[in-house]
Length: 450
Image (cartoon, rainbow, N blue to C red; front, side, top):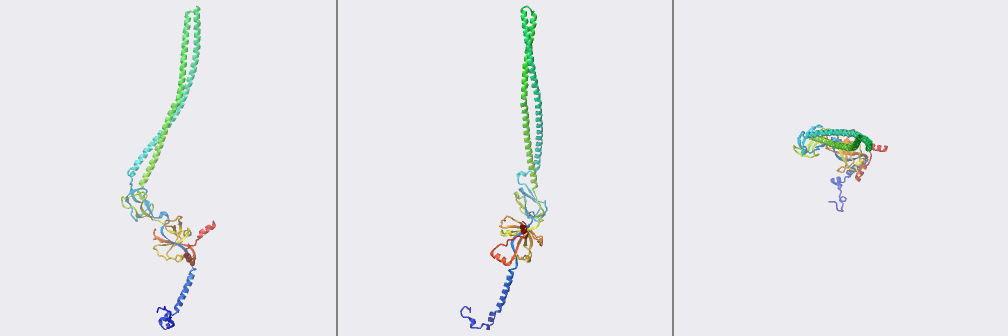
């Protein structure tokens, strides 16, 4: 029954006499199937020589072309406490609109009149600066006056010393004259005394000569005293002249010391004024930061910090905003081995999630539901996922992208490379080889020119 023995049933029984036997032993079925296999093999062989576009497929997502058009979060540069919300999620805000009001949580800024008090300090410090400046001018005038007075006193004492020297010379001459007169009077007196002793002169003449002698002696003593007095006056004038310079230098040095001290105080006050102005500007700017404003036109996505009275640190995200005006783009990632095959300006096909598409990656011309894009940026450093990020912009020469897609939706990309026969692509895939390395026509032309 199972035809497992060496006895062949068809040699003993004519199976063609049975209807089932005739159907089983009919050879025409096999001939039609063989012709089908032959036709399929010929068609398959022809297909192997059809052109196939090598490609690199990858997954990505929709984003905005410009960094300023991408979703962002708003942070506060200062810590604070939420006081009031002016918007709700989904609202459209314009640039400069108030989104949130916060209050200070640091005790250094609790004073509601902080700006007024700081301005009062600035005004008081400006008064100090003006006073120190006036004192500088007064001390400068005082130093100038002292120097001029020194010149006048120096001339005056020089004249006084010169006059004293002249008087000393004059008195010395008078002393000599008085001494000569005294000697003459002594000689006359001695002669008269001798003659009177001989009886030649009268006593009266002796008395007269004695009187003249005494008068000459008195004149000599007086002239000698005047001479000594003149020398002392000359010495005093010289000493006074010597004392003049140290005295006035001491006064000038003290005035200059006061001037330098005033200048130092002036600079300290000016520095303090600069610090106060800086502090005032910081306080004023900080008071403006108590209101979180919209940086551009956009939609409020999500309030990351909600409620009233919730506190936050500086730099902590408060809410997300999506710009109202943006230009769509697609970011995708390619393997490092495929990166040399991607060039700026190269054409890419994009399939968006949610849009029906029939895709033949090797025959882009017969694909349906894909949209054209061009490479506008290639990252030079690998991303965290181990691939390189590629940014794609809409191809102006292709059909426009759907207007209903939103930033963040998924996308699949097909980078079109070189055209090769199908058999070559099958052979490459079986051997695990990368696509053929090539340069686009623009890059190749630039290399030839250089």
